[in-house]
Image (cartoon, rainbow, N blue to C red; front, side):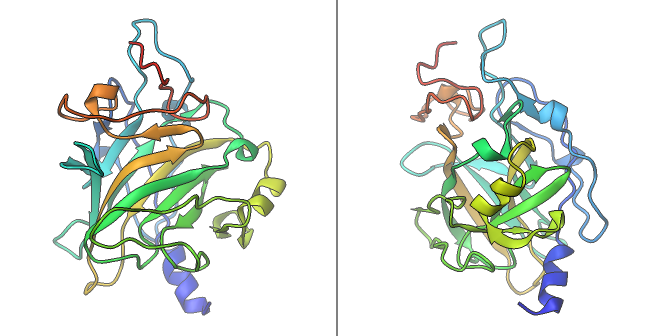
Length: 262
């Protein structure tokens, strides 16, 4: 990959400073800073990381926070609700996404599944978007959706929902340049950082090509055995009670359980 292209994408490193969450999924666009090329602010890992359990009032912990221009939309993928994020040149939407809660103490070696159903209402996989960001040691590991460097075999979506597949399978290529590892497989990164803590995971849409705006919608996000469906009926902060989301019962996700006992 040409050095100039790498420099462009290095300049797209996002700096997140999300506000503390309460209740279901929340939106905090005014409290999220994304300054391309301006370095990276410390992650609010203590506020983002949650234990895998319900609180004393039996309310589920927040599964995610919307940031930038991130919004909930209807319908989702065979469900009532999905999340949407966009990029457009000024004065349009500069960026958007979803900041997911992760269980406290989640080690790199224990993170083995990331996937989402997604589609585009505008644009396609380009400019490093959409992508997952895995926060480790106050830096980002970028995992691109679609056939974007270095993830040339990842499938992109079209105007209807399709699945990203697991983008951190052992042989999946990730961009760990912020940590000095360059492009490598996820299993290689895990071997180098097995006990380092994952302090956050985001889905991000941004860009830098004025003629190529992007609007993407996401649903059924898998983080290990947990599925985030954005439905209020499952305590995930959706804005209607007609959701039909479901959850895994593992302890490596957002603190929700399959029995949904509140």
